Length: 217
Ligand code: E4P
Image 1 (cartoon, protein in one colour):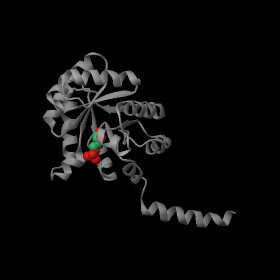
Image 2: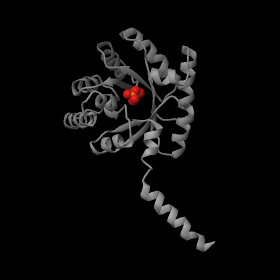
Image 3: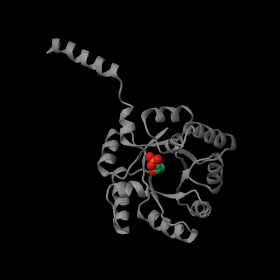
Image 4: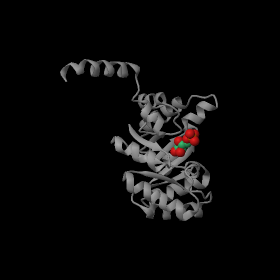
């Protein structure tokens, strides 16, 4: 399973990249706004800065909702850097645009996916990634991990190439569960990635080893 970080915060991206296990970055307009990016030039520069740090796939979301607008925005984003993946919402015009991007060699991430039916459409259109939002599904009293499993099973059975990118991760257990059910990618906040490190027995064991090692000094 690949690890993406779900943030537009350059310091967090650098920290995750320094771990050596980072395979990509996802952003969205809310995450860009959270780090204070304003204006289209600043947005484009920020995406380029992220690409220059990680040199791995970086999802950059369009804000148009009509076919022509999505295509125009997506082409500009894709021209920014070879690592850009155009993130397109799961709407009718979005599916048309994903098919166009797919036919024209531009990678896409179909976002705001909440059902297996939506995931089938995204795969049929040729999306590179499909992003089911599992935390938001859990928040609405359904099981987000079940959806990841269902989509992964359907894609395997039907031979779809689209990668299942589990998004809206809330905690380290989400990451473990997504790995268990066959997600291709997990995009996570830095806190969830670092949360995987933690176990009290590791801390207790290390403290004892370091204590005992004082005898060697
Ligand atoms: C997906 O790519 C989105 O950026 C993200 O995972 C949404 O997560 P949220 O539900 O925590 O906003």
